[in-house]
Amino acid sequence: MLKVKVAIIGAGYMAAEHMKAFADIAEVTIAGIFSKTRGKAENLAASFPDTMVCDSIEELYYKTKADIVIIAASITSTKSISAECFKYPWVCFFEKPLGLNLGEAIEIHDIAQQLSAKAFVLLNRRHYASTGEVMSDLNNVPGKRLIYVQDQEDIQVQREAGTPKPIIDNWMYANAIHLIDYFSFIGRGSIMEVQNIVKWDPASPEFVFASILYTSGDIGMYEAVWNAPGPWAVSITTNARRWEMKPLETAAYQDYRSRTLIPMPLDTHDTRFKPGLRKQAEQVVNMVTGKAHSLPSLKDALDTMRLVNAIYGV
Image (tube, one colour):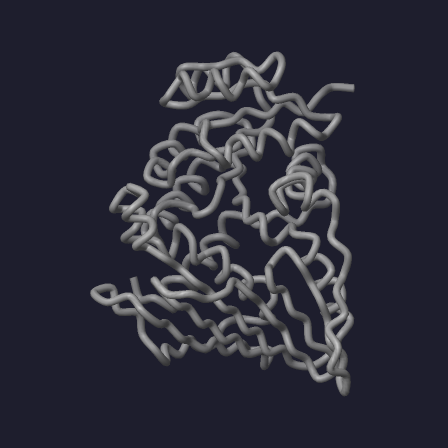
């Protein structure tokens, strides 16, 4: 059987986690890696036999003839990397977000369309076992949904860690997108209106609160606390059942007239690997081998970026 060949761009934490997930799939070989810091790429490749270390994206493609390229470099270079990757006939998979901000995401999307490039975005929380359990159940529950997302962001910690200023200035895209993306696949229909109840103040980041109204009648509520304690959590309430993901890797439900939260068992893929990545890797392989998959397209990711923009106004 011919192996699906995967190439990696980047040699940081996420690149390593993606490599672990793909290497666990029998049909996959990690064909090559490129990073601007060659030493880091060499160190990472040492754990994966037969993985070539390359000195450019061009070399990475021509030496590996990879079917897939995973772009897991810094988001400050996503735009330039995308323009280079779209020149070759592999399928491109971007670690989220799709660029620094909405403007960059639109540019990347448009370039991909112009070049007829095949590209998707890796939004791994869509592939959590908890997400799968909740969505499978919700699809059988009629009626409106109240979707409540709680977010917590700390840019002070990022400053102290030396995170580049362009990333800090766009932190709602770099990190809050993890939570805001839940609205994109739980809310049904089109978004009619985003109401900014407590508006984002970049001069004094504190609280953000917004409501999202859908043509289906679903309602989204987004709460974010900045530079203060708070959870990452999602709950979905219907007339018959309420689901809660807190933390996001877990899922529990509460039926109408019950006070008891009933937890669902954890998936071993989400304990052995960074949650969501192993199932996501399977979906990537399904896509390139012509099987059904549930990967978000560039347009899907762009829609989430537009929602981030509507909530934060930047």
